[in-house]
Length: 54
Image 1 (spheres, rainbow, N blue to C red):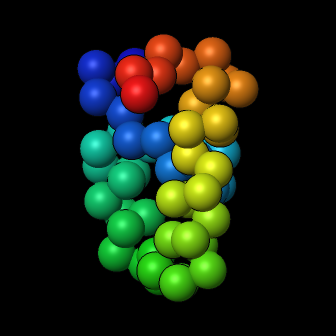
Image 2: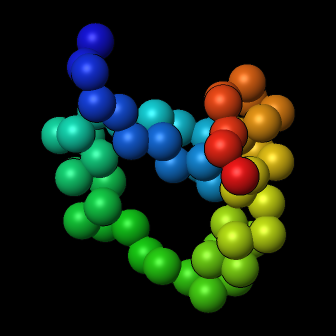
């Protein structure tokens, strides 16, 4: 287990730093995804029991 994880909420995945770097090399930024993230990210974190400071 790593102390640092990267949560990719749109995929419902969490990656260690090494796996995140590999994923990031092949990922694509789609404008529709960015809009969805901006609209829904707070609710997603709350629904998955993360502490959210607004």
